[in-house]
Image 1 (cartoon, rainbow, N blue to C red):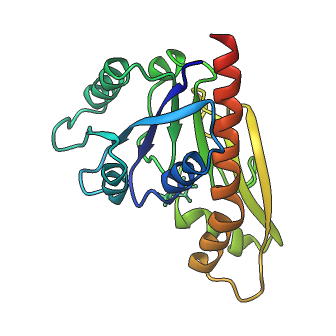
Image 2: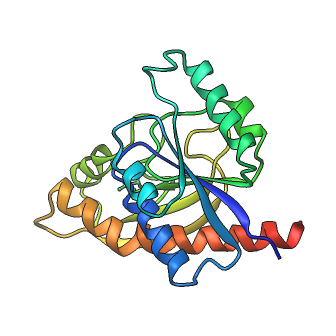
Length: 202
Ligand code: GRF
């Protein structure tokens, strides 16, 4: 059985990409294989991680494609050229249009660092999410993996994991705990779960 070809899209450090690659190496993603890493930032460390594994990379950044639509078309092209069957947004900051998303129904995943529907939607990304969590004073936060639809952070939820908020947390400390205890755990699991479904549907 051929493995599902996965593209991971990252804008930054790529620790979630790393978690997927670690799981793949450990044999925990038997139905899929990361074959492409795409970034909208040429300096994203995620690209270096990919190169270390001999994985193909592509950069579709603002410098080369100042227009969002043009950038999106470039991303779509590189997906087609590489025969990509599942797209994973792992800290990917560009929002892609409804037209793009409709091309991949139940084939695009996103990891969000809160328990959706709390602290999500436009403007809630990176440290801002954890700042908002601390400002509101909730005692539990976490992470969510969901399918991407045209509604920002609004697609069907695949997996969630709760994480305790502690008294002395700073946004940075909380972000690290959410990553370690939730994101890096549920994202690889969700990737395998969807790859298994897609492989069975083939
Ligand atoms: C993660 O917190 C992810 O949930 C969010 O952006 C961050 C990306 O981190 N969407 P990394 O690039 O995977 O290290």
